Image 1 (cartoon, rainbow, N blue to C red):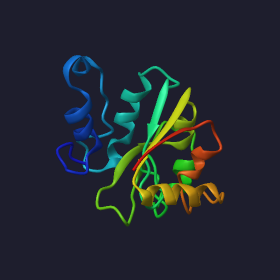
Image 2 (tube, rainbow, N blue to C red):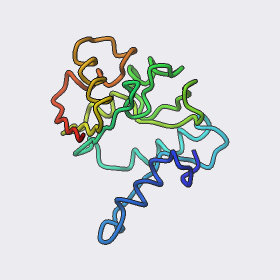
Image 3 (cartoon, rainbow, N blue to C red):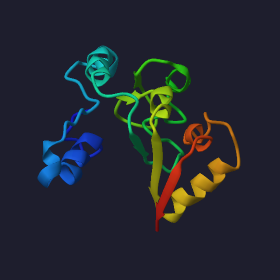
Image 4 (spheres, rainbow, N blue to C red):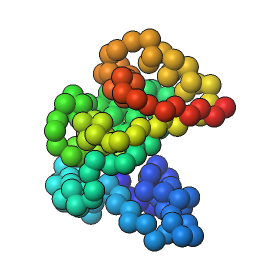
Length: 155
């Protein structure tokens, strides 16, 4: 995904978080100049592997469909992203126009602390639904609900 896209998390991080003293932080977007995420995932994984692991903190969001960290319920690679020991996975999702690169669930699970930030009643209701079941393929956020997870909700 182009970092300048309105849907780009990298653009949002640069625009809202990497300001002032934080602009000196090392930021690794999960993007590549390769033609496809599948062609670029190894390059981005090599860069990500040089970071300190496990991560100290993972901050997750959640979409209205229960996805988190580009783990979408209709992703063609969801099973792989949920089970692989690889650092990163290239994923395609019929409901999303852009293919992308994401951390595997296993890699995210290794973090020392996990936080979930959601906003709005609709996402609170999806989270409540997720807490009532265990099918991670239906609502991928469930993969993180069994671990210690601090949840922050804003109306």
